[in-house]
Length: 95
Image (tube, rainbow, N blue to C red; front, side, top):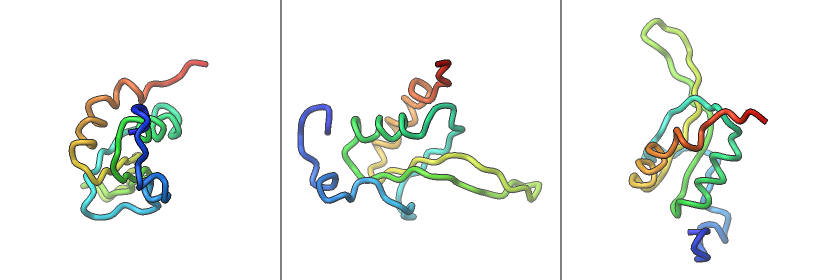
């Protein structure tokens, strides 16, 4: 992890943050209240595995298309940790 000064081979080769969401990743959907960079910086600092952040579109039962942000993690434990801390980092900044 970055905050402990350890080198992550996935980060060195540019393989940590993916451009697509693989089907085996564990997803966490949320409404974005802050900047996406704040969320991704927290993940880079506190997690070690591969991840994806992007938009998720889905149909509701009323056949409407809804939108939300999604963060997906290869390591399910990191997804759980992110979901637990999300309300602390996903806050509206007044400045």
